[in-house]
Amino acid sequence: MDLHNTFEVPLPPVEAWKVLLDIPRIAPCMPGAELTEVVDDKTYKGKCGVKLGPVALTFNGIASFEEIDAAAHTAKVKAQGTDTKGRGGASALVAFRLEPAGTGSKVIVDTKLDLSGTVAQYGRGTGMIQAVASQLIGQFAKNLEAELKATPVAVGASAPAGVVGNAVELAPVAAAERVAVRAPAKPISGFALLWAAFKDMLAGLFGGRKQG
Image 1 (spheres, one colour):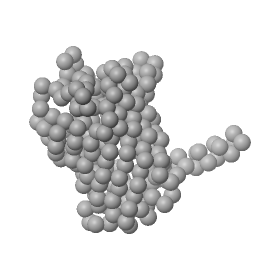
Image 2: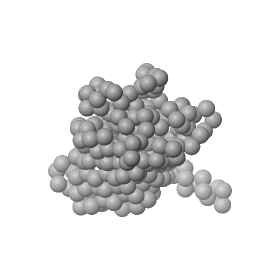
Image 3: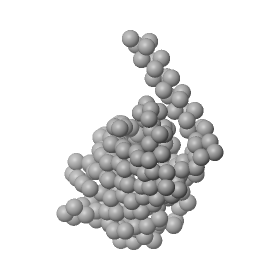
């Protein structure tokens, strides 16, 4: 299934680009996500959990940058994960790009998502999955904004500065040293997440009818 999401960052594209490639810094901003290992300058391991009522899904996965274009502020990331209880897995190809938006930047995220096993049953309704993804991205954006306010980007900051060949140029501070600096954001309750997603779907449904 194809998912499309956007969010804004209160930084111009040049600075926002550095932040978004600083995986150890932004990973804890995603609800339920935790970075567990920096394999190399393009590959990261982690886990992600979400609660759906009494059911808790936890995925162990790996993500790697497939393409990075620092000049155009675009990148592609390939991610794969499996449920820790053997109920299936997920794979995704995520493409994101930055565009100027006022004094900040808009981040546009396009995702091709494939679910397998029992987990795929939760993804039968593409509209619901898109709505859930929008809620997660929205919370991520709020957490990221709070992170930026707490620790603004400084001159010569430790965010990746660019690309050498196909590799991200890492900062003087080793990325692995920053993995344990911040605790991950708490997972969003499944009930709260699905209720918010359901409201988004209703708003889109009835809003579309009114326009028609």
